[in-house]
Image 1 (spheres, rainbow, N blue to C red):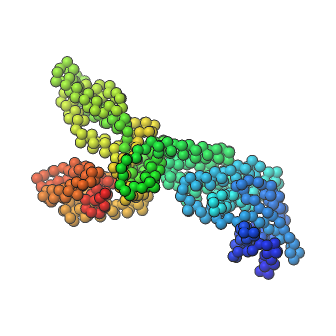
Image 2: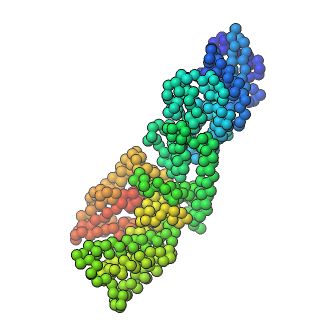
Length: 579
């Protein structure tokens, strides 16, 4: 204690004022000090002997040569005290290291900026032949204005150095590459070990988890539109050192992703519509928030090529607080695909008959049959924003149908309610992933979606009331549990008030009203509540279109959980506010 007090007095004599107690570190004790209104960190180095002294002196010699804005600039010195040499270092004081601020980092732009600065630091030291070998968040200092510096070169390997021991224990194991974990392999560790650690840090900054093993959280699980960063990290975490990217490759790719992403998001955002009139609570900041989120959603949905193959992992109602719709071009194409599917399935059904193709198809010389084709043309003309796309295929299948089957097809596709239920409700005011998966399942290519999705503001005007209620992934158990409890509560209130029993049927819930008079009272009340609200009225009408009268006194309603029950029914029952 006396020795430390005397050592501190040496610095006090040089106009340093110590603030608070020292903090013990691996190599000594660190004090915060102030001189000429500037803050410094003074480290009193532990005494070394033998090869460790040689290593420390080599570190001083090499680190003092480093000159880069993202690499710590330290002043080293020593003085004699009581027959011993006391080594110290003085450097600018940083309040935070990356470890402390990772939990607070939420703005992806800020994170990318920090990571690019860290990449610049690694690129610089690698250009000098240096391997840091202990890259971890604790060794990355961050200033109040976001400036970042790489520090702690205590176990770094410098070019032409011969002092690395084969047995040296190097680095924090949580950030070690596989080759660093092999005992006695220190001399074979290359700069790719730093790249590996950098990949772990990139992932951790976004996911707040230190990735271990192969099944680690992906960045796109948290920031879906950053799927390209996942691809980069995967290349950095290759278990074979030679197969990892160089730091130059990593940094250039990180910068490319940053630039391309901002350009794409801005382009999508510029193409989104904004109504002339919105509710008063939709101020500029809220509109900006919606546009930002929508542009990110559309970017993810239209450009992430693994989206559809992994569709079972995703919550199809993700970000349902924003309604999305397709362009007229895509809408009419989707409707025509449904028409084609109906005609094709009916044609293939006829092919199962024993007489098969010998059955008579439409006779286009017959006036009545020809009128059926005219009716089909009228339907296709109604949905012609996509030009003549699919017209030939549709007519080919339709012309091959038996007369009464052709009439059945026409009755279906001329029914606006059918078109609305089987196509429009999936693409005209739907959550982004629900809309996307519906179109992809129809066979529309993902690249066709680009520039053909916009915001539907009918649902979005209720955005503030439902903000961030829906997770991206299906495996978010806590959310799912709360969601199911909420659904059950809504069902039980309907049962208790209106006498409707209920059962789960897949993603739908079947309500059975055993008293038709009670059901009619419920329906009248719901329609009365909905009348003054255009959007809500449409939602209420949708659920009553699904009613089925199965006896003189029994009515069935099959409603989907995620919107009909959670939103529309909850509003009818007074559990949610009607806007």
